[in-house]
Image (cartoon, rainbow, N blue to C red):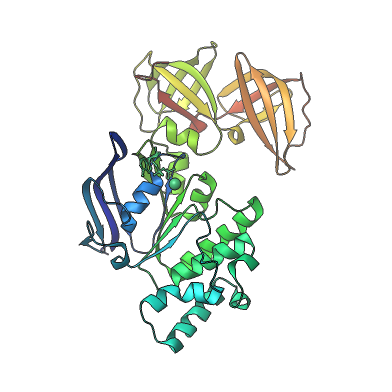
Length: 367
Ligand SMILES: Nc1ncnc2c1ncn2[C@@H]1O[C@H](COP(=O)(O)OP(=O)(O)O)[C@@H](O)[C@H]1O
Ligand SMILES: [Mg+2]
């Protein structure tokens, strides 16, 4: 089956003055995909989205939407729906008028307009607020209306720039579920910009991880989490414990490591190649470590002894900080599974598997 490519970025570059803020961005987005641009503040997410939207022109490269070159084509000719972080509803218009706005511009006949506005208000589950003004709505409702307004014109591409960032945690989660449902129901090709890794993992078919205007990795949520292309990607997606060390020996599918603190560890080599003696950063995630107070309860060739420094109960899990030589290692214990309560000062053994160890070269990093 041939894939339908809806959006294509080919070598896109954008400079502000001397600063390159988007550098050689290449991407193909398939029809119906929900793709996230994920990265820290200032990495170039909004700038890229604005070039796709037609608010900014790239300095280099080509932008294609449905196979047509869009460089120089004005925004209103690109068939887009957009939602921004801040509520961008017109305060002096009712919800109905706000949602109808794009259809009015297109001179849609009134009966058709009413039908479509009502349908899209149903879709975001707010048919009862049509006559209200934006200030009479909660923050979450306003963003839902902004989404309705973006969808009413049946855009071929939906662009969302941190639409959930101004909402409190509970609402953010609710609207995130809602967005996923909508996106799957309508099947509209969507680009979702966020700095929140969980949102990106939850919503996307694929994630583009950006750092300093450069694409670090493009992959499925599973790939990004389990096969990070760089140390940046691994540490940006969730919490991870870092140790420094060197490669003792490579061979077969495992890498033998020695931490700077002197203890030995093993890692799966995955597809990475290292030289013997190479300086590396070694990572393991808190949820991949098992902790026991005596003989280790779990199997795994990485075993270290340490002392509990602190414990914090966080509902779904308890996080223990364990001192292992010079390192403070965070360990997550899921509530209900293995409910030994650890106390400060208690000697413990930590165990984790080679497949859960991530190793990145420190070559050229000056540390
Ligand atoms: N109009 C502008 N003029 C100059 N610099 C800008 C402009 N817009 C954005 N920048 C800079 O470009 C970089 C990327 O910004 P932006 O795309 O907004 O990042 P993000 O959305 O990932 O937080 C930042 O360093 C920002 O300060
Ligand atoms: Mg931004």
